[in-house]
Image (cartoon, rainbow, N blue to C red; front, side):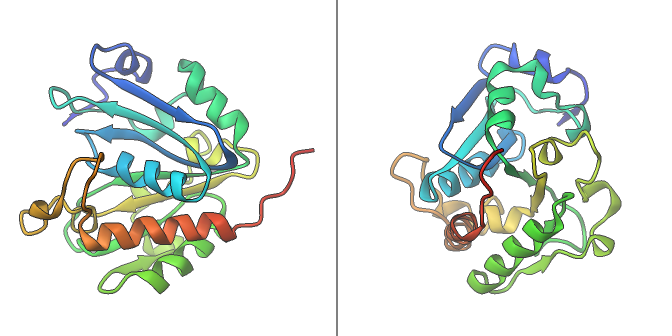
Length: 212
């Protein structure tokens, strides 16, 4: 992984990088570190959005690149599609991948919209076994809390949450990799399937306020 070597705009302009956008209900799922960078985060966001008739935005890096731009430097104004997504959604869930010793089974629910974070955490706890759902900000490592005011998850009208997923639930550990098929006709690793369903249910049961 190369950290902050390219700006967000430069990454989007790189050959092979794909932007995905589907505008539906104003509940949004987003994965701008998708593709080869934070693997299967785009799959989680895309499928949770499709199952809940929610909106989706993703940036898919090809296998030949893994450039990471910190979330606070991911500027929607660099992308007409991303700006449309942010303007359309009243709340947003950004899906990320992380790996840190001591957190291999921890799902971290950050972001500034704490009621949304608690709502999604409750849905995850109902659906997932064997994983620790962390939604108390003081228990989330400082760099993974997603509370920076320029973090995209906080830019929608009612703010949002940042969901950090460890490799184990994304099915990218050696023991889990054989479960995976491509996004077209795939057979998900069972915990990943449960995760997607929990997020979809959380989106469907979140009360969306009409825009003024």
